[in-house]
Length: 473
Image (tube, rainbow, N blue to C red; front, side):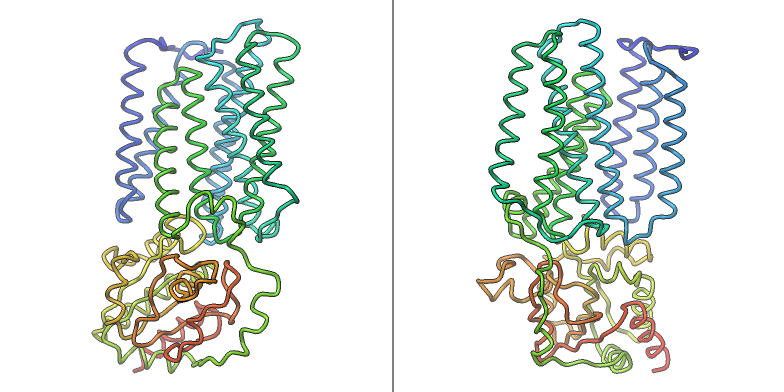
């Protein structure tokens, strides 16, 4: 089957339509930098993708339209159902899964194109072969690495670092094998009995490398890993675009790759760690037996009623959200609490740490869902100077990103990581189920500060009770 009106791939209309498509990509990304316009930006970028897909499908030489349409319909249905049913707490693993599927699709495209060339008896030019190999390797690494990230976040596999003896040596061997295989194919890029098995071997080696690189990374580092794998998927798409001479893939992949790289570097900077340290240090997960003696240290606790009284008589309150807020789905209750405090003349702001939660921007997304005004969201560098003049800090599920050990304990694995300096506030309320440690697997000294009061229980239930108490004061 062929489209009713096929476009010439080299013609001006195709180029113009692709320019329209990636202009919409760029404008959509720009709108995505602000919560109030992010949804509109997402829609505009999706429109751009629709233009790019339609332009590609309308060109001459497109294959079996029945399979293409079936794939579009099935994928659209699965995506629509998933977007409606997946809870906000599961959004990080959904992002990891979707990102991995993009990388996997690129790897399969590269394999399909290579098989086509071999079966057609063609000698592939290096200008096409090299980006095809890059697309296959990077896409495969992204798919399998993202699958491990999904498994850790979904708790299908252990969240703590999982390593093998000599794993770094094995990873190095796999990398060298991929380089050697690529060189061998480049030196003999014609059809023979050796080429396709070698290509498949490289595909398998790339898959193993993706698994081996992400398995030793702990849950606390998943936001950075997801951003990095997202950049990998973009780079693989750009490489595939070069091989297929597809402008939309080149531009779209480059946008994803560059933005993912910038985000990865910014998040690593926010943790005061290098990307290499995140990938190879095996840090960032609960340690077996961690937290076993935390409750023997003296700490102070109070109930929701006392917390409401303390908040009602404050002049300024800063709320520090973390993954615990997402698990409890407490964002709407927190917004209600802030509204009650404002009625009493209390100034309320939110302190956002760059790596709070399990994906980049996790807290911003949750709070935007609850219609929290954007101007109340303060980044770490903006809010920290104000905390010494803050009457009460309310920490909801944030653990490692508020731990004073990052500033004071040189032996701590998080030493040097910038934190939300809630210990500088006049009083601190920590809403948490227990005294258990965070993803880093270390005790939080904030819990034992004399000016800190622990309010134990489900965050949503506690905040809802505080809202009721505030309404009666």
